[in-house]
Amino acid sequence: MKALPIVVAVLIGILTAVGGYTFIYAKGYSYALNDPAICANCHIMENHYAAWLKSSHHTVAVCNDCHTPPGFIAKYATKGLNGFNHSLAFTTGRFPEPLRITERNFKVTEKACRKCHHDIVEAIETRSGKKGDDLSCIRCHSTVGHLE
Amino acid sequence: MTRKLLLVVLVTAVVTVGLVALLVNIFERKQEARNPFYRVVELTDDIEDPAVWGKNFPQQYDGYKRTVDQVRTRYGGSEAVPRTPTQVDPRSVVAQSRLEDDPRLKTLWAGYAFSKDFREERGHAYMLDDQTFTERQQVTKQPGTCMNCHGSVYVPFKKLGNGDIIKGFEQMNQMPYFEARKLVSHPVTCIDCHDSQTMALRVTRPGFIEGIRAFKASQGIQNYDVNAQATRQEMRAYVCGQCHVEYYFKGPEKRLTYPWSKGLKADEILQYYEENPHSDWTHADTGTGVLKAQHPEFEMWNQGIHARSGVACADCHMPYMRVGALKISDHHVRSPLLNINNACQTCHKWADTELKARVETIQTRVYGLRNRAMDAVVALIGDIKDARAKGMADAQLAEARKLQRYSQFMLDFVEAENSTGFHAPQEAERLLAESIDYARQGQLALRGVKVPGIQPLPAHTPVK
Image (tube, rainbow over all chains, first blue to last red; front, side, top):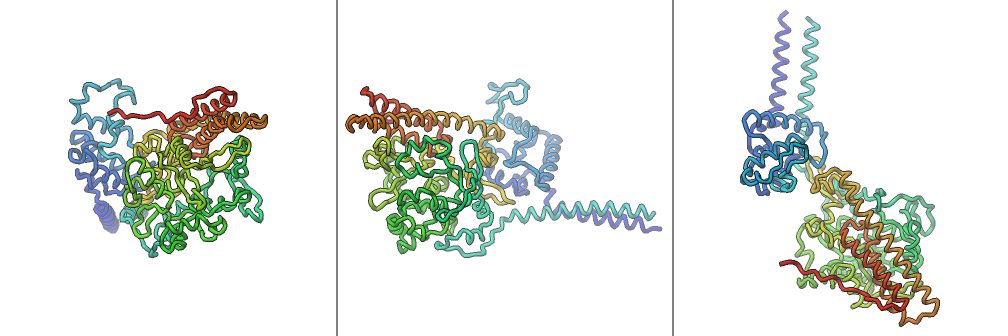
């Protein structure tokens, strides 16, 4: 009986086609890119994108500059993790509003501020190591990236 | 073999279902993002029925209809109290009586219709009915002016004035209430705040147009035209300020007037009433010409930090919300305490329990002081009443009466204002403190002690 390999091959073909079509239709590939416009692929990010366009940082930083850590592997690991979590949340609709940053992403962003502004803020840095004790840039400068 | 085959088919089927479901979900989200707007009716400047507007704007209309909700907060909000409908008052549900909650209010308003019936305000949906059927209607004759803020009068104004809303306004003010009532069919509706063609906010109430012009003139801006000169963000407060304000009926024409030409603070409004002599009624116990503060939310908000920071009424009472991919203003106008997520957390990134605690801390302090001020004013009223009974002459009562007028208005300004001080906490507490001081001075004046009397507003010179 030679039917099985053929059936399996057909099924795999169908799966690949449906999966591939979904991926392309959803512009899944674009998430590997750097253009802020693609972060608003999901309409939930439209307000953040619009706010970023009007922010003081839009000429010097794109989404990835503040929301991913430096280094190829760290950057794509973070993109992958957030991409999965966001897609899952957006698909299921299970997320709180207004949107709140996660602990992990908060740390990434706090570090990102210091990538450029390290020289200026070094003198006022606190390094207690205790959660919530260290000085936070965006607690006061919440509007520099995007208010919303 | 067959089993293996079946298993492969089954697994593939399950995975395919998952993939197709995802594909459809993505398709739906992409459709949402197109922000569909279907114009199913052609709106004109003469359509006042909100249900017709709601065909084009179903989300906003849905929220608007929810203002029937009766929900309490710690210090505000209404409770649904059942009542037996009667011939004159067919309501089967009303809000709790404030006079029963706090009988001191009856002393405060002795001789005025408010001492007969005063209930907690309900949502916008009830504004017309609650005004039509209140017992106050039975003890006094109210003018058509009341309709300005208890019904959708824009189209009726236009009809009465042959297209001129100011003329229509002047005519309706002079009608008896129940004659004007026949011309009005809805509580506040879409057309009262929105232009039918552009949906832009606009002011339709002559009282506000004239009041804000007088206020701006006091700031050195002449001939202010609110509909031409206000920014979009200012309009998000001004449309509410059309009604949530202190007002009186000026002269025999009963012209609805906002007493703002001296400024928006309670003291400045009192000064206005000195220069344009007016009393709402003569107090039954003391014979004093007194004033009832109405619901000066707009004035109080103007003294607070949120106004100072450019936060408008709609930002907290009608915050933006997401419906699919649409961002709309929540037309379910209500206390921000019932919607802390959208109302507060957009700016204040703290847990809602924390934010609620902050608001209630302010309100508890203000409410405590309000009770002390109420005792003080009621004590002064009692003393003046006694002095009159013992035959004290009007000339000797004059100073105490003036102090009653001031202390009572300042207390009422906070009491009638629907935020228990939150709109401007320090201003509310200042007013209550001064109210207590004036009540104290009034009692001393009756005993023949020379008192400093009414103090001017402390001058504030900004640091240059």
